Image (cartoon, rainbow, N blue to C red; front, side, top):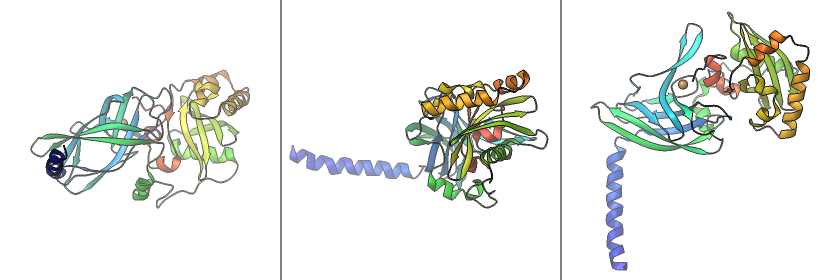
Length: 308
Ligand SMILES: [Cu+2]
């Protein structure tokens, strides 16, 4: 046994090294990959990373066992509205040039999710590349699921992340309700579609704010962190339901008290107003404002514009 093993091991190790050396010439360097965590009932999310290919190639597809459909997307302004679409010819990766997939820009869209993507887990993801000669290769990854970009990514994308980059707006000051109104307006208010925020119900580090924008309305759940308030999800009647609030990670007793407080705060509202709040379908995860200042997945599509 010893005899065979001593011969076999170096030989197979060498073969493995050669195989890896051969492959590495084409392997695309992937850094800071992450997928955004989802809340219960959310069927789509984005995955982001920095790609650098040694040779010119195109990212033509993506697959994941957690998603029924996965596509390479871009975000684009159409008039005043940020929309996203699948890139019909894929995403070009010029030789040696890093291409960033990030919230608000190019991203991998994971749709028809088979299960919620929980923070601090990982998911499998396979990237499909097509080189200049038309040869397809795949690269299998496991990427972390997180609420926010990995610290290294945030550091490397300063200009794109309001909280960290130049042009950063300081966190709003003042009473919580004012801060919350400011945070929501910063993300959704537009000259042609002013956003009205009220009532704002604050309970500890959580708050639910009703909003109306033109003929649309809904509620937003916000959370307070060291850098201030950020929008966690946009939803409709779910945000006055303690059970739904709990799915965002809120402790049960806190969820019960917050749901009751929201109902009390909304007791004076008209039927029409309540109907608008209720009209928001599903739950749209938004995430920390610092990361969405440049147009996060949910934020930049505008309230209700996300049609996945
Ligand atoms: Cu998308």
